[in-house]
Length: 80
Image (cartoon, rainbow, N blue to C red; front, top):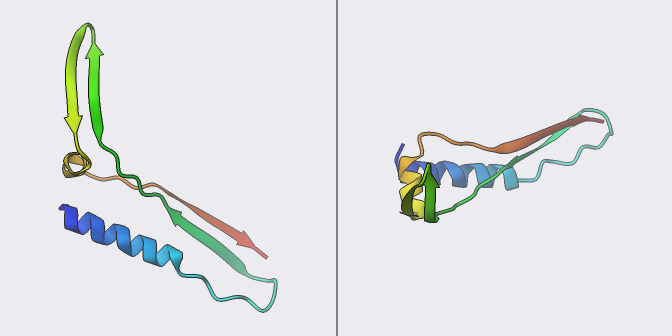
């Protein structure tokens, strides 16, 4: 999946989750909240395993190019 597709899907989820649901006139029925989480992070520094040290310098776009799939969010459903 290329970066444009990932960004487009992210914007779609943001717009879909930001739309308020219509108010219910009665207290009966189900209602819910969908909240996707988005985070952009890069990595910079050094790491070591068994005494072998390696320098890491990866921007957010570098990390995004190597992501195969990732999703995180919460869905809350309640009755009444």
